[in-house]
Picture 1 (cartoon, one colour):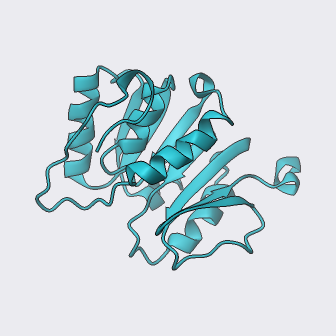
Picture 2 (cartoon, rainbow, N blue to C red):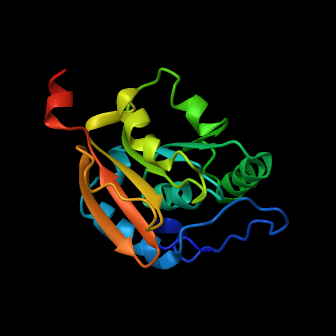
Length: 186
């Protein structure tokens, strides 16, 4: 795996393979997503939440491109240890808050909303369809913010009232949600 843009562009990182519970986003899909994001957001001003963070792939990409406020959440101790080690190696410890917690518990906790939330859950997770509503219900997303949910073709969100757009990169799909106008007014 590699960081595809910013000051760490080209930097490779290799998580331990033994019993590793992640499915990292492919470089092809990640590059497509970040091409959209770079034209939509000023990374230096974003507050980012990386749910089911795994290897930290998305967190590093945001920090590499100038983001200074990233929260990474994963419950697997090996992932958390790897991200702590990588953050130290990259000297980005002041830019990333690393949280070892179950994502569904974490999103229930009161906190300031985020500008951008990435959720890359394991594809076999049964409650993937619940993630957008849980995040929106708990007001974790700012009104102009985006929630990007990575999933496979088994899940479809075209009828979700908060769906902004869908980007398809083979078997990797990014459904992008935002806070609807009626929710902003509440």
